[in-house]
Length: 385
Image (cartoon, rainbow, N blue to C red; front, top):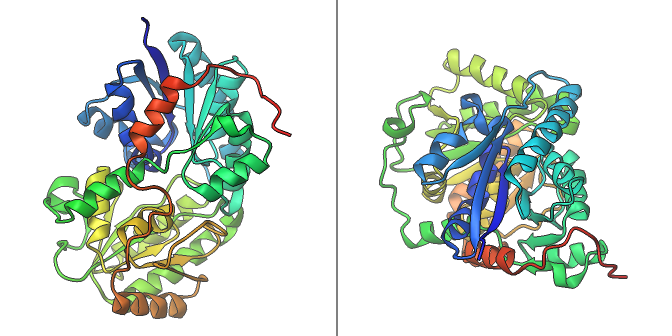
């Protein structure tokens, strides 16, 4: 009996960690064949090349789609997405997958949904039904309406997809596959690697021993004109905290170049003399680094999702995660240096929180793979109302 071909498209570094355990489960499933496609910033060293990590993890990359246009303008986002539609359409024509999987809400993921749906290929969507800020929520909900199978990460997300008119039989609350990695980290939290020796990075010579913080802040695409001012406020706060800091580079989002430029300037001027900067890490290493930190500062979804499971104190800045379901570990603040510093000190003093499995219990990868194997292949909608 022929194995069902599952084509998973990864367009950026965070998405790989989101689905890594699902990829392994697909690869090991007796009825499934994994087709892994990398595109966009996931292929570029500038943003943390996913390809080398994926291959080290034992995955074969079936297609590489180079579609990312650089440039600090909304036009670049639109054209990047347009190029992805064209290239992915060809990739799907060649690979002939039985199901295509698109992930979450990044702006370019809509290209995966369009390229698959317009060729009558069943589409599965990971992490539908959640709410966030900026362009992301529009893309996430658009992906949901394109999708035929919905692998959501929480009960509230399942209810929201149901209210969007999707049939109950097509919606499965698997939890988020990244919680599988977080569960493994909770079981073995000790850091067993040297970040600088393993990943290089630039900046201060610091080690993950004693008290340190992690910063991960990305541009908000609808606030691109304020990106530099926003990161400057965070820089002021982190400088004032005067604590060893592991700082991860911004994503490719519109406004990211302004943030990167400001970070380079302050790094070169030695204003951030206790910070070490990284582009990417293997998912397990990344979460262990966060688990052992005193606090995470920024606006990454990691602070909302994985950190709730890990119980890590988080200072969430600005509107990027607006309305996303969160745990007791998160405090929200605006782009104000004094406010960021004050909340960070409060969170550090509080210490770690109890684990909250809002986005799953750590067994999502296998559940998702089983769902992909059992799904009644279809590319049409069944009315739910």
